[in-house]
Image 1 (cartoon, rainbow, N blue to C red):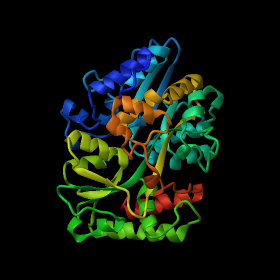
Image 2: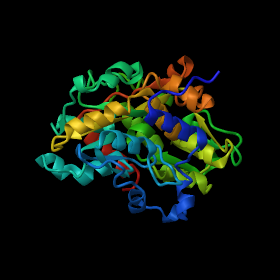
Image 3: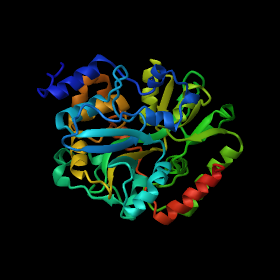
Image 4: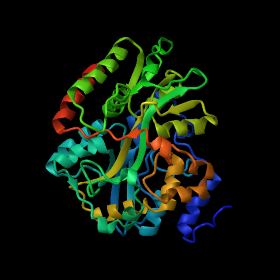
Length: 400
């Protein structure tokens, strides 16, 4: 039985839009006439909205996010949930899809961050493992949790605490997901269940790894029996790195990329590799069938959390709080989750999803069940010293 639509006209409209059409991040390229080779960082940023219907009388804020990480309407070129926020609050939001990799994004604004100067953004969503570096250097502004009632009521236990931010006062989770394995069911029906399956000679030159070192190496470490949440160090890191280096040097690995790794899956240059859960779901949605299979390895997958944070230079923190609390409304969170198909941090989103797409409401990649949750691990945060050394070692292994 379908539940009645909410009375709030803004939320009713969002749900009706979501029911009317299933949108795809990836098919945006088709509408623009862009092939994978033509899409670079500049093209992706150009796809982002520079604002919406809000008149700005209540202020303007600038939000940087990962590409294809917010519900998007290809017919109108709008971000429905974001436009609804602007219309209801008159807060104008300049939205930029400027993040493809944590470290490269931070490198772009590191000088401004260090000097407390305007970075060009009032909030951005970084992965917790990188966000901690900014917090250590006193480059972030603290959130006032009293201004975030929805966050306090709705945040799921899985993301409520971080080793570097136990009360989530410096970072508010936006989306979460799993780093696991993927394979093309048509080109490689044998499939993969373990990281070591990627080293099969039949996959030589057809494997991709992720440029985020924590994601790639944590999966290797899990297969090597390492407790990634616990007390591990140089021995475990470099043992995993040696595996990756060997496979890159031998030609087994075709590429190591950030967000753009999905293009190699689509062009069939890559048959199997490491992947982020939501990307695989969206690739299959565009294909209209399960061409790619996302796998949580038997040894486990790792959890990543991308969180809102504020640089110390922002002058519109009140508006940023309003934006974040808005995205913790269950109906809004469900609308975003229906599009991005990552793990939503909002507890009531599953019930709200039943109105939008009952099939997605039972999707364990968005709403993990107990069995899957038991095989998802949150890699411990690195110290600043470890991060520097490990990053240099990883980049050297990649030939950079």
